[in-house]
Amino acid sequence: MASELKKRGQVAKEDTWAIEELYGSTELFLEDADKLEQMVEGLKGFTKEYLTKSGAHLLEYFKEMEEITILLDKGLCYSERSMDVDTGNSMYQSLSGKMMGIYHKFATVSAPVDAWVVSMEEDNIQQFYQEAPELSRYKVTIDELRRRKAHTLSPELEELLASSKEMGAAVEKSYSLFLDADFENPTIQGEDGEAVKITTGRFIPLLESKDVRVRREAFQAYYARYEQYKNTFASLYEGKAKANYFYARARKYNSCVEAAVDANNVPKEVYFNLIESVHENMHYMHEYMSLRKKLMGVEELHMYDVYVPIVGEESGKVTYQQAQEEIVEALQVLGEDYVRVLKEGFANRWIDKYENEGKRSGAYSAGCYAAHPFVLMNYQDNLDSEFTLAHEMGHALHSYYSAQNNNVFDSEYKIFVAEVASTCNEALLMDYLLKHTTDKRKKAYLINHFLHQFRSTLYRQTMFAEFELLTHQMVEKGEPLTAESLKELYYGLNVQYHGKDVVMDGEIAIEWARIPHFYYNFYVYQYATSFAASMALSKKILAEGEPAVKRYLKFLKGGCSKPPIELLKEAGVDMTAKEPICEALKAFGGLIKEMEGLCCQI
Image 1 (cartoon, rainbow, N blue to C red):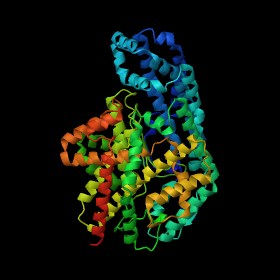
Image 2 (image 1 turned 90 degrees about the vertical axis):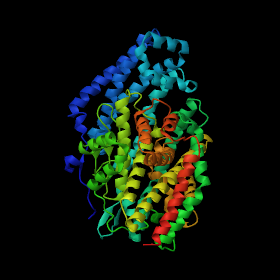
Image 3 (image 1 turned 90 degrees about the horizontal axis):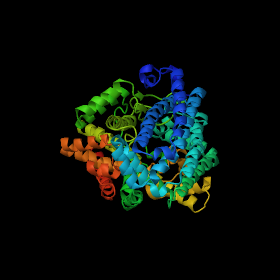
Image 4 (image 1 turned 135 degrees about the horizontal axis):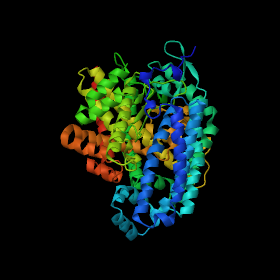
C-alpha cells in the first residue's frame, strides 16, 4: 500500500503555524472582510477634484489607503495560508476567492488615483508637501509611482487594466490547483520495497536515492505523468506569457523582460549580464558534471543522477530539531538581535513544518505586516530541508525587520532583493557546518551540497531565466508556444548547460511543466543574482565582522526605501556589474578542485 500522508486535522498543533493569531475564527475573518469591502467602496469618494485640491486631501487618501492595506494584507495572509495547507478544502478556496476579489476591486478603485498622482505637476506635489508635512511619510510611494510616468496610462485605462488582473490571474490559479489538488501522482516501489506515491515534495528526495532503480523509475514515472498532460501545461504557460506580453505592450514597454524588471526598478542590463556571465563561465558547470560522473563511477551520467550525493555520509538524516539548533548557532555571526528574532520565530509557531495531504508543495515565507511572517515547509529530515529552513527564515527576518522599520508601503521590499537574505543565511550555515567538522567524508558531503547549490541556483535558475526570455520573445514575434516547441527549446538548453558528460534523457524536455516559478513573470533570474550577491555579502560578514553586519542589517531594515540596486551597493555589492556573478562562479570552480582533492583522500 502506498505511504499515506496525514490529513490536515491529524497534524500536531506544534507542527503548524499559528494562523489563529490573525483570526481566531472564520466569523471574525468575515467581519473584517465585510468591513474591507465597505472601506474599498469608500475610496470612490476620493475624486480627482477632491484629491488635487490640497495636500491635506491627498494625505487623507494615503492614510485611508494605509489602513486598508494593513487590513487587506492581514485578510489575504489568513485566507492564503489557510488554503495552502489544505488546498482541496472548498471553504478555504471560498475565503481565498473572496479576499482576492476584494484585492482586485481595491486595485481597480485605486488605479485611477495612482494615475492622477503621476500626472500632477512637480510644483504641485512639492506644494502639497509644504501644506501637509505628514505627507512626506508617503514620499517613497509617491516617487515610485511618478518614476513610471512614461508607462502610466490615463486614469480610465489604468482602471480597465487593473480590473483585468483578476481574469489574468486565473491561469496561474488553474495551474496551481491542477498541480496541488487534481494532479494524479504516480506510485513506484521505493528502496524498502513498499509503494511510494511521488508527490512534489518527495520527488527530489527520491532522485537522491542511492538506488539507481528508484531514481530512474521516479524520474520516468513522474515526467511520464506530466507528458500525459503536456498540451494542458503548454496552453497554461502560453496563456501566462501572452498575458505578460499584453500588459507590457499596454504600458508601452519594448519587451516583456523590460516591463518585468522595471517593476522592481532594476535595469534590464542586469538580466542580460547574468545570462552572458554564466555563458562565459559554462566550463565550470561542465567540469562539475565531469567530476560527478567520475566520482559516481558510472559509465553514463543521466539526468536522474544529478541530485544524488556524490559522497555518502554515515547518517544523512537531519531532524527538524537538529536543523533548528544548527541554524541558530550558524547565524550568531549576525548579532544578538538577529538571533533573538530567529529564536522567537522558532519558538512561536511561525513555521508550518511537515507535508500533509493537500498541502501546497515546496516552501516559502510570507510576510504579514499586522503580525509576523509565516513560513511554509515540507520538511524531509535531510540536509536539503535544513538549508531550505535557513533560507526561508532569511526571508522571514528580512520581512520582520522591514515591517518593524517602515510603513506598510515601504516595508514591501522589491523582489530583486528578496532572495539575498535567504541565500546569505544558507552561505553562513554552510560556512558553520564546514568549520565544525574535521571528518573528511562529511566535509566532502557538505561541499557536494554546496556544489549542488551553485548548480541549482546560479546555473539552473539562469537556464530557467533564459527559457523565460526565449519563450517570451517567441510570443512577441507571434510564434505559438506548443508542447513540442517548448520541449524542444527546453531540451536544447539542458544540453547546452550540462555538457557532453551527461546523457540527456528525453523525459527532461517536459520538466518546464513542473516549475511553478514560470508563472511569476521573470522571477527566477533573481535567485541567481541574489545568490551571487549573498556570496559577496556573506564573505564580507565573515571577514569584516561588525562593520559588515551593521551594513547588512541596515539593508534588511531598508524595505523599499531606496532602489534595490542602491540598497545592495550600500551593503557592499554592485549588481549592475558582472563581477559578483563571475566571482561566485570562480568560487564554484575552486570548490570543484577542493572536492576532487578530498575525494582522493577518503
